[in-house]
Length: 330
Image 1 (tube, rainbow, N blue to C red):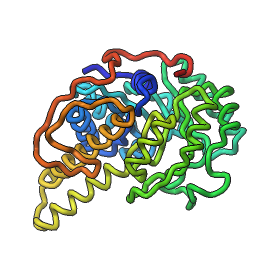
Image 2: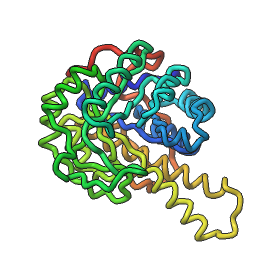
Image 3: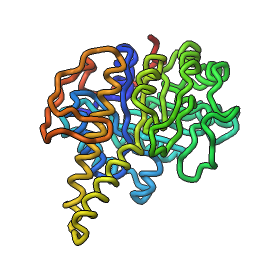
Image 4: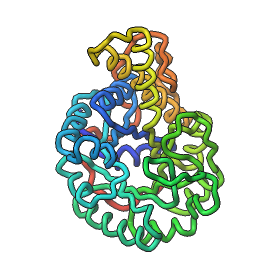
């Protein structure tokens, strides 16, 4: 299936009052698992490559980006490609050639005025080249190299009044906000500030993005989407499923040396996690989901090996890329 643009998927989700899940890719198995999970759930998804992941692959987007794009195009599910937490202008400008329709340009570590200036320049360049731009305001901690940060500490969360000015002056297409989640959480114990989400939704006209969603329980995710969150980023949950499956396999067969032996269950565990997250996001809209017999859960467990190819449920177009236009309004 041709790639769908991130802007299309986010617009369709916002219009339907639901979320769209975006999953971080590190290895080829991650990409394959995301595609398989989206097919199984019969729902669209976004595949994200972070700047850290590109750095892991030698700092060159070309090879890993081409592999992820090939997996997405071969899938029967509607999938988009996104670059996540990009601080490098060079990587931002590599997005169009790699088939990426969107970039999260992250200048959030800079003082507010510098963040505003850098983001404005990124948005201007992105829109000139058909790239949808997400930015961050506030402090969503937890990434490698970040200082320890309490998601509930004073001054950490996104201020609605500041968000109004930031969105208006930068022209961003979506805004990642700090509302109580944190990156790299391996336990689902985060408590979100739903009143703040509602206030931010009322204050700004662009879709809101929740980073660090792996640590957010299902009930909190549903409430967040009902309050106005749209793009839901998930990364650590896939790594937890992957590593858990590898550990379990090697515990039962410690002499194994062929990585395919343990990468198969690792990929399957991630696919189950993807399908489970997508169904949680879909249910948040209050819309009925297709009947399934495999009962995939967000922890990646399944009751059988059945698999279904996903019919589209969002009604979004499947071809081409839409240019980055005015902010989404709903």
